[in-house]
Length: 202
Picture 1 (tube, helix red, strand yellow):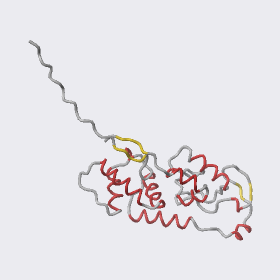
Picture 2: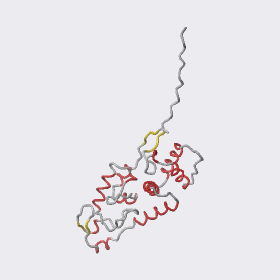
Picture 3: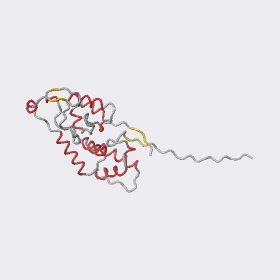
Picture 4: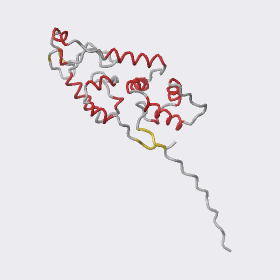
């Protein structure tokens, strides 16, 4: 008598979900559910109770694509620094970025004495240096850095780092997008910020 072998039930394969490599500057796997829910809530996208993380990440990625670059950068910096994400902290970040983008009068620069770069230690005219802080988080405004060093460091970083993780060449604090746009060719920045899709299983 031939005995029939009972076939084992094969569990259905879970679909692989495709997310950008980063969402608001963070790998999807490192984004906590409380932070995801908070960002969605602040954008008037109320998450459902006990909503799956995969669904929340999908909604968050869609939200990031709709937001302007400067707001994405502000939220990304808050996440990177582990700062509370509130309406006030986002507004403070946006306001600080606007203040940092103030143009310096060329005539005033001519009156300033020569400066020495804190990176390359070369002395040059003040017009060859970035004036003011590089970002709202920098604490070294008394340490001048020449524009050439800034450009070279940003060009180096974009070869290895996610665009929202570009940092100050002196103290390592995050750089706002308006600062990066100022010192990098627009076509290079545009080509760099395109997200590369990766497959994640949840």
